Length: 634
Image 1: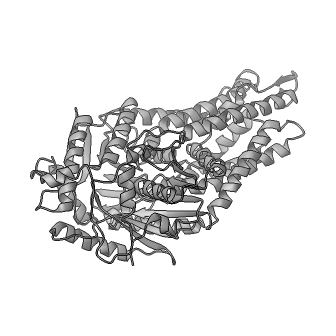
Image 2: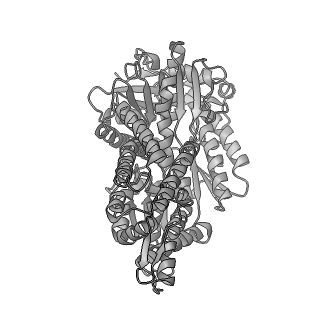
């Protein structure tokens, strides 16, 4: 058996208590684990197939070998999902392969990018189709005029890609080979996201036979906070069974005081999972007081004398024009970003504030219990100077795509009109031209997944003129980092394309394409400067006080420092800060204090603690009240 992590922000090694790499490691007899490195895997794949790719691009475009090499040397943003699925297919044993693992268990990235991972076969098939079209003219000339019928390496590569796409899709679609298990939490936000994701999977023909509900509080003695949490969880569990449980098995997994880590703890946790049905977890009815508080909220409030750290008073937030909130999936980034945006907007009515979600699996609408879309608008009950938007990255790409396609078609037409042709048979005077029509559309189809997110984040630059402050609720760690790294890679793309245009300016008219590339390059440069300006841009890291999230947070802080992004604060979310007499709360609080103390932060980075809320804050009033309960760690 092999356990594979495809999340760019790997935590599999943390959970197993071992150091993992891109090569499978034996962690016990019969069990190996690996954390895929997408960039290295893609580099390995590109090195193997570079020659045929170069030939296809030379045959199908007006670029020479030098230009093609420059393009192939560029980093490609968003290749994680494509390579991840190709690597899993390589590692799995198939009927046609003697080696490989009999069972591969995949620990995926969070929701939005997992759905993109599972769509990778379609993306590979699209790439194969585009390459085939680029190669077609050369193939036709070779077969009909040069009398050469045998396939070239380029044809073999196209056939390989198409076959890999087809075989991978067939494996994903075959329930005898692949099963999907959806993990969620007993919270409204997680339920809403799970409904959307499971529906998307099943629309793609991939049935989800099992729902696992993790971190459910087991039955115990009375406690003002735990009783409220159990009451809320009981309500959400009923909704999960009603809305997702029909025709599926629902497993309810008890919450552990300390997150299971290491083979021994995980084996014990696995046995609990195997036995979990949920019938024994919530036997005791919550008190009537607990049920009443579902209308309101109870915080595990700070101890006496704790110093408040209201969002509007924090130096880490004040004076910025761009605030990112990010961290591991499930730690409460969206809730923290929403509460901060509300209080910052309320504090100064003259400042126009935009709260923007860039996570493909948006949750702002669920946090505010209000419809939110790609058009910024005010939230009922919120301050009028706060607008909220969930970015539609695909729409942002489509807007740019039409202009780029038209410009590329103009270039291709100009190339044809300039007499760029292939004289393939000088003796017979045969000259063949590659059709210009539609080349722009086909080249754009080669754009890697993730380019949509780049054009989406560029809308942040465009929006700055209209807002004094933009608060960004990012995707979970790995893909938030990819988004922040993408401007550098994308600007490199723009510069290479512009150099190619200048090189051929005597043959083709750069015109519209050059203007588009210059415009995009300027926006990217502006975004780069903004990201590196600590007076304007800060990244607020949100985490939980458990070992696995804490370790990921330390790696995130290191990466952000390398990217030269200011990280003035870490928020430890949902802490049990005043445990009272409850034995479970007291043990949990002690474990949390150890993790807060263990976090290694950059000099000058503030630690903010936010209290556990029962139930979690939803809606404007609850979010603002919860934001008023944040405290400093010192």
